[in-house]
Length: 274
Image (tube, rainbow, N blue to C red; front, top):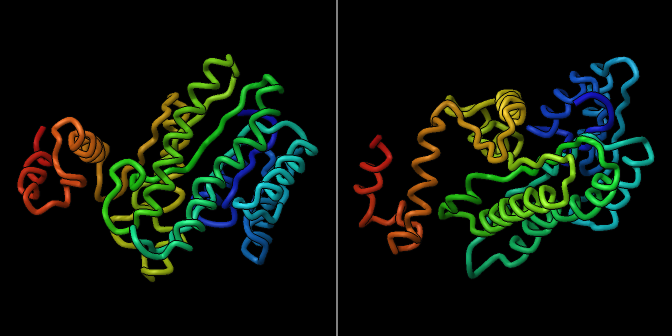
């Protein structure tokens, strides 16, 4: 998309930074939003080195869980010019369980879910009023679709992002706004969050750059649901897993039957089937 600003939350590293690089190469000005510190400053410098003539870069320290901070980010963006791309990407992963770690729940939801909602509330009224072509990208997760056991707070936050983005697409369509929305669902990607646990990139993981390239190609094709594969999980395998998860409701199976011992063999056969 030619002209305007691309605003990326969580833009100092990982897929956020990789996306910012692609937007800069495309000729857009880039506004990086992330927590204050060297990572944000260094990211802005790196983006500045690749900007095309006439484009700019700005770094705005932002805690996306803070409504006033996200509103200030939007004010800063529109003070610079029109917003062509809003990428609500900032996220965290904290351990959680259903009957413990209440603080992890609240923090995760405030960043992963309300961070996206804060972004939509702060930016969309002015983007819709501008009546110019624009794009909104919300970063979800496969854990918000198949909800595997292990981290329910993260799953709930990303399931909420999925529902919010679906509603956004409907409301934009009903309003006749020239704004496309996309649910960006990375596969296994070697980001800083993963690197904190695994020192070297596993063979199954994609790089952030590979994931963003897939995102851009599917956006160009007009896709709303953008489920990224990786070196282990193909698009076909993703579809089978999503179909099984929905089948729990249709077939009245136990919750999360994919991980239930009584259904292990049935799921394995289903995943291999055509």
